[in-house]
Image (tube, protein in one colour):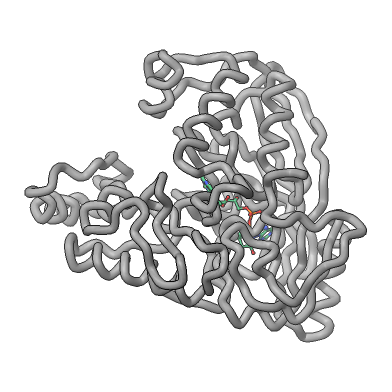
Length: 363
Ligand SMILES: Cc1cc2nc3c(=O)[nH]c(=O)nc-3n(C[C@H](O)[C@H](O)[C@H](O)COP(=O)(O)OP(=O)(O)OC[C@H]3O[C@@H](n4cnc5c(N)ncnc54)[C@H](O)[C@@H]3O)c2cc1C
């Protein structure tokens, strides 16, 4: 059984519209009006069109690792994306363009690229979910993000009712976002990545990863070593799904790192002076990205901080809110998120924003 989906629905397996909790890594979410499995791109398009013909709202759900679904569930049609496979579609010099179907489990795909000596995704090892969801929030970790290697996305355009090929430059990729996030217009069918034929990783950019590898920032390491080290670092933070570890029953980071205008960051720095210097990174146009985990911790919400019904901050990572008891409600998780957001706002004057997509719930 793959460790990618909370409860994988595979070909022939009966679907259970009674509770969407079964299909999310948080194990939260009420019933679906209707639940459909789509096993290839044509089926994805057809199931969406059929739901539209029934005048039902559509929720496209893949690995369920970046959604918070309300206790009332989703009254329309949920289309579970379960298309599989990838293939090299072009080769030029030392690059290879690989097309991956939307439902392919992301980490299986990354493993396959590493095995074949295709460099470019190795630092994104261990991230749950599907390949087709990676452009939605420009998935990133350990110094890499998919915007660097995606060349195009094939998507069904629900407005124009046709399949479109969207070049990377038109995807609007930003930190944890793109034109696809919070938009019902696009249903991703496949993604093209341009990777480099090389047994070595790209330059290691993330200091913690470089330290763990015993190299300097900027060095390259064998692909398999980069992958194994990233997975090990992630596992230590509860950031690789593990059915036996409730610290991983989350959506990963619940809040994005706030990106602040330079002068606002200086105010935060002053307010933080007595507890230390907030970890931060320079961004574009004088902006500064600040560590949300640090702000949360210093506002009094440390690892293991508990909310109602057994929801809690992960004992391994301050940014992960978990359904630790396995039996909480979305209302309880959202209450914890709200308490943390409000606490950080009143302590540092910074508003944190959720990273996952909220469906029929709000913080
Ligand atoms: C333990 C853990 C660690 C994580 N670590 C990271 C990390 O390091 N970096 C990071 O960026 N993210 C991380 N995440 C978040 C998540 O894994 C990624 O965002 C992932 O890409 C979501 O994929 P999914 O298939 O589970 O999407 P889902 O949760 O099924 O869907 C997420 C959103 O995308 C939409 N969507 C999904 N598939 C499609 C499609 N084919 N077409 C159109 N819309 C679609 C959904 O409608 C929904 O709005 C982590 C999550 C967990 C649980």
